[in-house]
Amino acid sequence: MNRDVIRVALVDDHPVLGEGTALLLRRVEGLEVTDVLSDISAARELLLGPHPPDVLVLDVKLADASGLELLDLCGAGATIILWTAFAFPHYVRYAQEAGASGFVLKSAPFEELVAAIRTAAGGGAYFGVNPHSASAAQLSPRQAQVIRMVARGASNDEVAVELGVSRRAVEAHLTRLYRRFGTNSRTELVARVVEGGWLEMPGLARDS
Image (cartoon, rainbow, N blue to C red; front, side, top):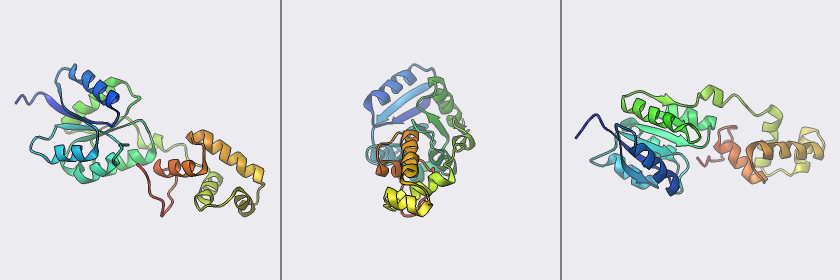
């Protein structure tokens, strides 16, 4: 086996993106794409099998589970780069704490993914997103109050009474929050805020 060649596996549940990225990586000198997988169970079998890749490029959001779960299971003995469309502060912090070898956004230039793979294969870590800059834009105290009450099932009128503001003010807060997080409903807003690590709410699980 040529140890100068870095063996790479990709895990992404969007076939066009996974296969397309694999095609580009195969054109890079020194890289060999061994597997293109679409689910966590197959990725886990590969990592724990007799011929694991040198580097696993792993999407965070997959149909059957979260890539963060695989990082928890295999991170200590595997070289994993998290590859995601979301620069959520929770993802970046979690990746570092769980021992990921890299974090690259799908919107980043292709050369950044290649650099991350080479750095990780050499024993280093490549984080294309700074966890401090990712968490710079925080919720205001009032926005956090509104979201917490919405998560508890409070109506707009109930939120207004507790906060001592008008119903119209509450509606304005929610409209701005919907626009900010790209959501259309109260339930979707709470889920997006929690999964992104913008607000800790005990009892509400993150869908990562």
